[in-house]
Length: 408
Image (cartoon, rainbow, N blue to C red):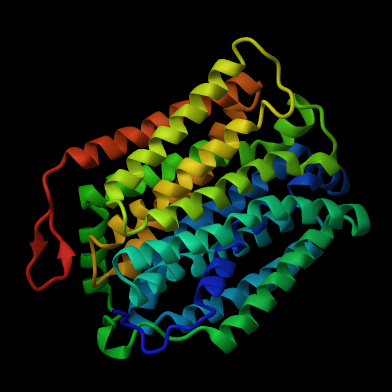
């Protein structure tokens, strides 16, 4: 039964659209890295640090988006955040040097996560059980298109108008999403369910969520599993140009493999919702991801990088990832029924912080050869499975009476 007074028919599209801000902000300008380095008088390594400049504040603000929505409602923070993101994108488009670009990328990161964090809470506000898992899968299916479409659009825009057009596109995306939210996004968190925005109760709630071992294990599971996929996205310029020897108009090969896998996985996740328990969905996802990662490692023991064999793993890994992710996310949110926004915030923080480490440390470390990237994927997947195995070994969590949160 829905807790929202009026869940919109456009809700999946709106929530998915808000979630695409993240991948569009990361992937759209990747084909332009060499040209940006030349135009701004810097190196590609410095240009790559614009990813870190975006991801670190993105991770930091994840701590606050959900808590603000728990206190002031879901709708207003999204509207303010999306407008601010559009303005920051204009700043990126006009940046005269790498320093100003880093500054405005950081401002983008501060605001870009508001839709993804609060969007998850909105879904859980409105739907329960397998209905929530099915809607989460639908959102993932729509969201999956963004990583493949973004570099294609970025390549076209770069070819036609130059690298700055990528950021004008992001500004336009922000404006379109603001208008869509203004017209169609309902308020799903009524005033009587909100919490007082005061330091003492907020700190207590943060402490309770952040130090809950089940939360940490589930958040780590989701973040590290995704990192195994995302390391190829972050390393795409090196993987595409250097290892595969492709050109800018062939940049979409890697991303198309991922998007096909995500769409198939999201469809299967929606079909499985209500038919098998979440734990079995996660196990199925891991089975597929391990097959993909092991194939990837074994391939480079005998063969050099080449199409299509060097990208097949990305499709199968994405299938397993998108089967497992909705179940993991709902298990995490259900730990804290009265603090879903905060739980979503902290999950987003863990996810984004690990993505920033991935961009600044792991991607440069493993992108030297295709075989090293394959080993990085398998290692990250194994670490994520370790988190899930420990979580699965814990006894069932009691619920703290009168608090609406899982105790530990």
